[in-house]
Image (cartoon, rainbow, N blue to C red; front, side, top):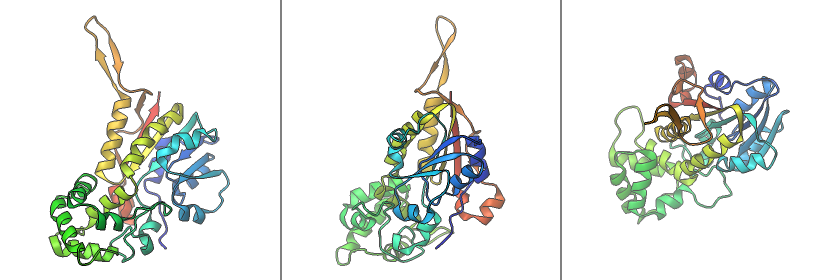
Length: 299
């Protein structure tokens, strides 16, 4: 089982302005990499995750309160437990290294296993259900919107034709079929975007993110920080637009003066654009290559 190395660790601590005695909510706890560092710096954490296996593996950590749930429900999960007016909230999106390395979870085409991809294994719908049950039009939409796959129509139609005599059951079967269908050019496997899209659809990742963003801001005290780490351009755009809407802008008035125009609660940027990993981290931890960190402060 691979060890999960938290990306942008120092940069995230700086973005959250972690301080002794501070209270923080980690909405995507995973293997608690960032949370352990927050606690090491004197903070207290409420950690939320829907992956029971991850919650079992981290065990008990002093200073950490664990809740099983989706980060889309972070507002209610935290407020019900008295975690409001907190100093910081963190979302580290995407898949953890242990999830990718476990073939039985079905997240990676590099290890043949069941075509599953559920972060919460108590839910019913798997990636195999989508691949073998959705229409070509629906699969095309998933691949195009959530994977930004340029060959979405060709792959979707190919899957529907191929599954008639033989449904897809494993990651290896699906990845191999896509590679044969569109060929392989460049460093990235041709199934990369399709697997991303299926994972995001199975776990409603964009819906969870949109719900979480509103909930996270509501938990912050004035001066509290909200940091989000993304790994796909789609999720980064959602975060960027959301932060911009709450940062707002000053609009000149016809009668003179100006007023602020935007969505409440109001925030200001706590990072200058997206923070990327340094070359040294990218070399030592390949997951960090696509990571982007954005943070805001509630004002």
